[in-house]
Image 1: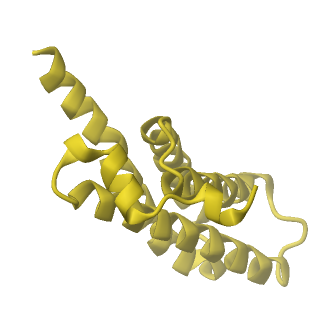
Image 2 (image 1 turned 90 degrees about the horizontal axis):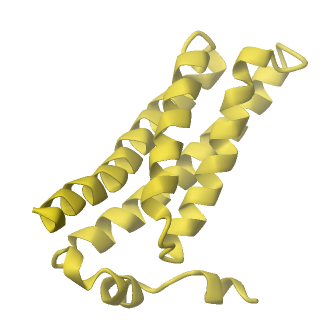
Length: 139
């Protein structure tokens, strides 16, 4: 399977989520995917800098690796229009929050903390949209 086959175009995302509003959902999905990738990259850069001072990585910071990995998975699921993207985003937001708490004391991870906050906010917004819409659908 090619990389192209794994990524939905904006028009394909719009078609899949046609009932979600006029393009806002598409923009939000793509922005959240971008923030997830930025979070993963920032985590890996920060951790590699941290390894210059601390090796091995302390157990309390292992959640930062978890965050980087789940952010990569989340970005891919968003870009292919996964039907599970809302649940994946909820998990990603929770893991980002834990990683932020663990990383705040390390100056090498300062950029990661800022980027992870943005990622968690975006993922939370995606995950909560389904809850709001599900409530309206049931009413």
